[in-house]
Image (tube, rainbow, N blue to C red; front, side, top):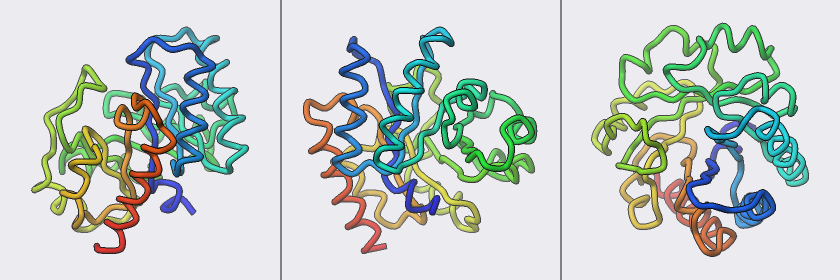
Length: 214
């Protein structure tokens, strides 16, 4: 079920210089620790390199029966047999993405405000990613953080599965206790940690506590 798969959503982050072997090892350890889905985000790779790492990621995620999402690149997602794609507001229109990928692919869309949330194109999306919630330096082209106060407004009439993203860490995730969402996307707080397996397990515990108390 998609809502369950979105519970602890890892967005890969290559802000530090690591080999492909180390990169894939972080992903696998994170999954063992509790990550329930992975988004492969590669902004600086040529398509042949991107496809190679996508194939390798798909092999790992399939082993653990969790979905793999590709950030932005529909062609790579299709060739690598990924489970879905995640798109931003400036990417391809969702109806065109759906036409290209077909109905079996999961499509996620990033949303930062009410106007974007109410866009008719969202009918073609399977899940919504709200953010950034807090300031983050994972992305250079970051929009203004939504802030905690706006989350309830944006999720008030939630229909589609929804996750929060952006600057979420172990020491601030408790602030999101009353959020009407299905999961949390974490990037550097897991990916750049010395022990991603343990860090993922800590997030899993925190999220379980949040969702029990919601």
